[in-house]
Image (cartoon, rainbow, N blue to C red; front, side, top):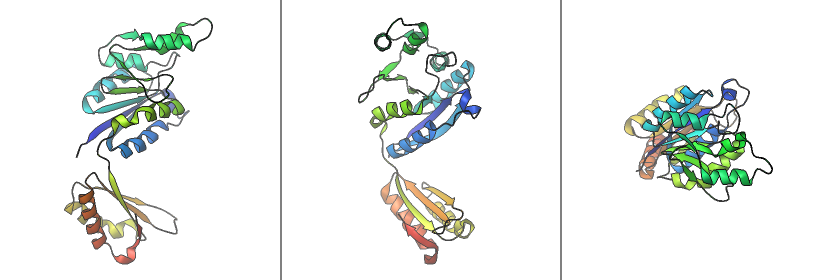
Amino acid sequence: MRDTSAAIIVIGNEILSGKVTDTNAAFLCRELRGLGVTLKRILVIPDELPAIAAAVRDYHRQFDIVFTSGGVGPTHDDITMEGIAQGLGRKIVRDPWLEEKVREYSPGTINEARLKMAEVPEGSELVFGNDLTFPAVKLLNIYILPGIPELFRNKFLAFKSRFAVDPFHMRIVYTRSIESSIAECLNKTLAAFPDLLLGSYPKLNDPEYRVRVTLESKDREYLDRAFAHLMAQLPQSAVVRTE
């Protein structure tokens, strides 16, 4: 079974100050899971060159894929491109294709702020997909995406298929027992199937169930055996339903 690791670097003072709520990381978590990619880390950092450079330099080596969110616009605090270039020892250059598009979509006199949208780290690749007006920028294993949620999602969805690996399979058990009552059953199942991804999520004030248990694996046969093992451990009266 193939396993691909990923990390997300969310860049922006507005996230850390609470002025803006990040939704890009949550969206990407769900998408990557569906593609079979294992998300290992989410980091939120300020609009500061040393912080961006250090994070990119570190994560570029640690993970198969790195996504950045935010800091790629025309204003003073949009320094993600420069930070990534600094972290990987690259220069900032003006991409000819991007410059042409920026000029095409900028009627009248064009200023340096607009042309900043054509600046990328040296050696970057433009990633196209579907009907994107402007491509995403990729440097080595780093995909540089905008922070505006609509743009972030559109760009990722346009080329998401390139990340697909062996998918995760999942079974779910809903129980009417409290978590402490079924903990031993969960522990025994995990001891018998150590590679299983097992999650237990209590729900308060729900008339249907009290705990949702998830079992995940990229090996469907392994998952089926683990699920059968857990079901044999749980008292029949504890199970509300399964998926």
